[in-house]
Image 1 (cartoon, rainbow, N blue to C red):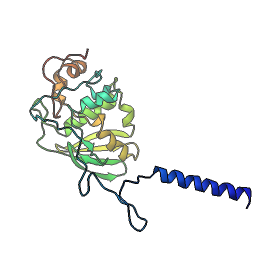
Image 2 (image 1 turned 90 degrees about the vertical axis):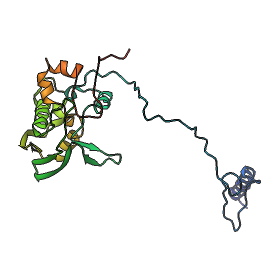
Image 3 (image 1 turned 90 degrees about the horizontal axis):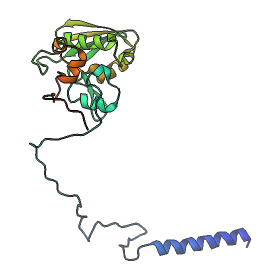
Image 4 (image 1 turned 120 degrees about the vertical axis):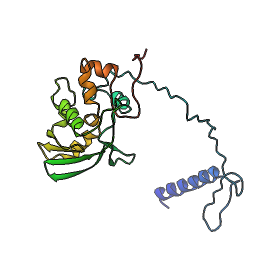
Length: 230
């Protein structure tokens, strides 16, 4: 017997002893070389250790986060600002939990040609000031995102050439390049956050509008005095 073979046999014997020592001799034994598993006592199940939490659907949720520098979608710089703005502004499209693009303020779209995207809008939607959401509002918001000197998101709309009103519930986007996927992604993000053109035009300035009383169509609206986080 060679030294190498002797060493291998010795290793195998040691491994078998260790494996036997690590086994649970008190556990269930299987027949025919299989394995057996039980949960809790014989025929029972493991009891849940989760605490019971009372839920009050009428309670007020107070949420603390980083302070947003602005609630103006074109000035957004940090993810926490986007999180807060999504409570105020609906977007044209949104991603579902599975990452699939779904219409939100839009109802659908058609790609007329590689450079033309037509989007149908929901009807009967109103901003929080009572003014209607329509194609004119979409054009106003997208034009401002592209042309405002302070806009931080114009580069994300590199593919967009113009926004055109077809009728009250239809808007047509002309693109510089065939990047419809990128455009739809932006319409589900900051560029697609809709706010009231009427309310913005009536404000002293865009800065004043977004700081004091931004008007969107989202599930929440700002009321009362703005208080910075201390």
